[in-house]
Image (cartoon, rainbow, N blue to C red):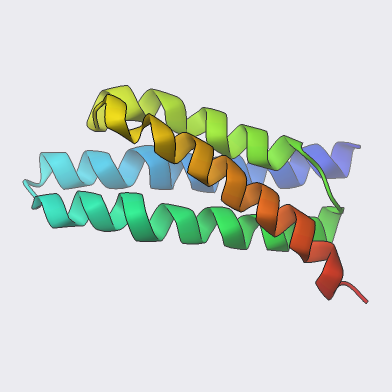
Length: 108
């Protein structure tokens, strides 16, 4: 169980960097709207799917990672985006869950 939480902490730190640091850099550096959209529509979903697959390969299936990723995105909606981005928290949860479900299929 301790190994599971250690892996979760690693993915949580990476998610915090992606969900909070990238938008903060984008807004403070005066980046265009396209940077924010690429982060929201491409980088974050790919991370959620890949982290679900990799996490389930190393630690087995767990609902903790999808819940952690979905819930950790919620505060950034109100900090950097608007209420319409709340849907992406569900999308990130779903992609991480999909990755967690398909990851064990690649296990030998």
